[in-house]
Image (cartoon, rainbow, N blue to C red):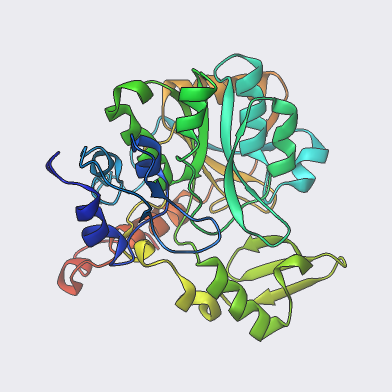
Length: 343
């Protein structure tokens, strides 16, 4: 894409067609601060002032600049993979799956890889925002997964310009980690993202529409829900200790439009990508992509912060199948028929 593009082009090409992933990268790079992503709605980035036509926002839009490994490499580049979970039982208990991501962040602080982390947090109504964490003791407050687009990149502006942070970790899905990588195009952000932890993701939901369905089908409010677990169905843990379930197809209509054109299931530009797919309950499948990622995960195992399962054989074919299916989204039927998908 040409550097002559402006936010007007982003509005036409990305926001209006409902393809905006709400990552907030455009907000972070906007010199006059006239772009906004509202955490209380599901709409895309909006212009709230006078655009100076600087052309920076199109440079960091992951919808305009997606990273997608070829279908011949469905998991992208990686060094190795394994099955892990937090060694601390109290941490593993409160995590959505194995709490591996939180254990990795704690270790990254301890050994000096990062001086801060941007993570997704939610309030009691499940409205979500990105928070800058500089004290690793705060990480365990925010261990649960949130299943809608969160503007994870927006806080980079504050982290770099006001807080003068040098080594920032970002946790996000494939589209969010791609946006974080694109920030290297802007000189003042170059090299500031020191660690990318990616989350397997096939789709996210528009919060308001999602909870409308949940209210209709299960008669529960967001404030009744303590955790949401996505397997082959939706599992809601409630404040009274009970659980309720909902078929995934019931919330299909609430999917963000951008998810239907996303081909990155395993967060291919991350240092380590993690998900519950391919792992037994309570564990995470981890794709270790970079030397930094390997250094971190090896240190976690050595320091006793992570357990590595050497008995369970990772269901790699299952993860590959999911990744291929996502890469085939929108492909012609004639092409899909030529692809061999693992059984």
